Structures are given as structure tokens and as C-alpha cells.
Image (cartoon, rainbow, N blue to C red):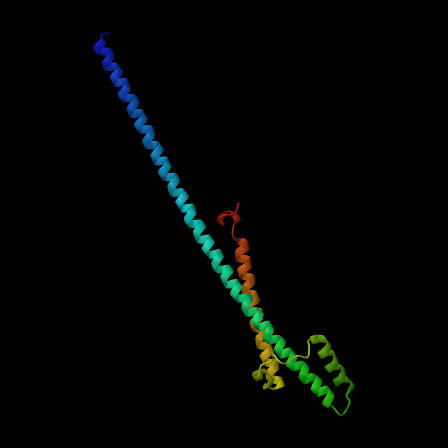
Length: 168
């Protein structure tokens, strides 16, 4: 072989090696692009899941506040009922043992202090029947709120921990 043919073959080998390197670099760039796409997709999914968790937690916090307010209203109604039962049993001139024992059992069962200062006027002005209906409505509200909070809690617990950012 002559020097020219050696240079020619060396040049061809160099070009083939360069083409191989370019092909490998293109393949690497393509793989990195695919990896980036998958990573971005995972980050978007994590962001959506995290936003869902935050929304459920915020709504559940609001529900808990509503339950707290309803429990306060229930206690106010109970205080008013206790007061009325106490007044009725004291005012009863017949001395009915059944009535007095019922009043005593109700008063004891409610276990409330005799502080009726926090009972709003609108509750004091209700008839006993209206007060019982009001108490029933509040109890229904509390039941609905507890059911909703339970659904939210279940939803939060069903979320895969690996999909929550910062959770290892």
C-alpha cells in the first residue's frame, strides 16, 4: 500500500468513527429527550395529586370547623332543654315520680354546666317542639359533615404515598 492509499483508508476509518460517534450522540440525545418527557409527565402528575390533596385537606378543615360550630349549637340547645326540664320538674305540683325521674335523668345525662349565657335568644324563644326539631336538624347537619369528612379522609388515604411530593 502506498502512503496515499493508507491516508485514504485512514480518512475513511476516521469518517466512519465520526459517523458512529454522531449516531451514538444522536441516540443519547433522543434517550435524554424521552427521559425528560417522562420526568415532566411524572412531575405534572405529582403536582395534580398534590393539589388534590391540598384541596381535600382544605375542604376537610372547613368541614371540621362547621362540625365544631354545630356541636356548639347542639350544646346550646341541650342547655336550653336542660333548663326547661329543670323548670318543668320544679313547677310540677303533682309530684309525678316518673316525670321527676325523667327530668333528673335528662339533666344528669346532659352533663352540662348551668351556664346558659351563651345560649342565643333565638334558641331561648323556640318552643320545646321547635327546639327538638332544631336539635334534630343540627344533628342531621353534623352527620352529613362527618360523612363528607370521612369520604375526604378515605380519598386522602387512597392516594399512593409515592405520588405525594417530598414523601419517600
